[in-house]
Image 1 (cartoon, rainbow, N blue to C red):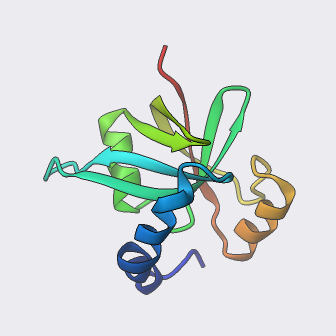
Image 2: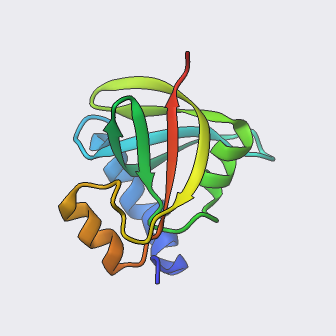
Image 3: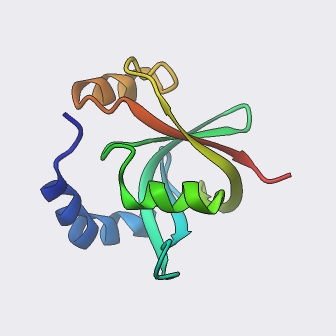
Length: 126
């Protein structure tokens, strides 16, 4: 199912600007800072992010074809604002896991209920 494009448009213009105010400081939220592939414009996208042993995983609630996902994969890296700090992450890859085993139990259930089977994984630079 993944969330519909109409929800994505609403979130882009209404929810994301509001969520962006706290997303970089309140877990499990974070902000992906990236540049457009063609425009070079800077973007800030609120996400659900989870860290485990230095590996960061981001739920792809709109699927793997979201523009921000394409941007960070094409760039080979991005900045992540989370828990009040900014991290440089590299080698982003999109992986599939229908069971969402990588996510905490409560989040796992939400991801399965919306059929969000993809996540983005990246690690710190260096």
